[in-house]
Length: 103
Image 1 (spheres, one colour):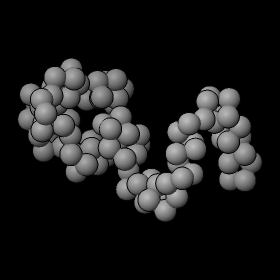
Image 2 (tube, one colour; image 1 turned 45 degrees about the vertical axis):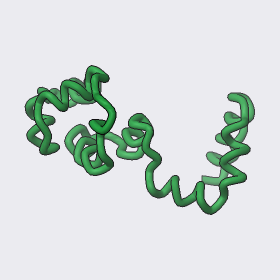
Image 3 (cartoon, helix red, strand yellow; image 1 turned 135 degrees about the vertical axis):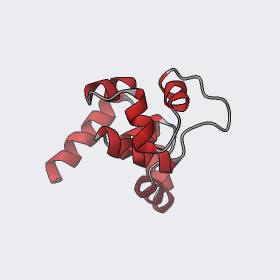
C-alpha cells in the first residue's frame, strides 16, 4: 500500500481522509502491524482502490479476500479452480496464453 500511496503522491493523512479511517490505521496497514480483527474490510479496500486509483480486485487478493465476481465463478466451477490451483507455472502460462487468444 505504501508504494501505491507514494506513487499517487499522497500522505498517510490524505489516504486516511479519503477512506474514512485514522492515520494510525493506515500506518498499521502499511507496516503489516494489524491485529486479528483489524484487517481491512472490503468496504475499506473499495475506498482505498478509489483513493489510490488502484485495481480493487488486486487489493482484495492482497488482503486475502476473494473478489465477489471471482468468488461466484469459484462457486459455479469449484473443480476447475482446484485444477488451476494444482497447476505449475508452465501449465498456468499455457492457460493464460489460450485465454488471451480468445479475449
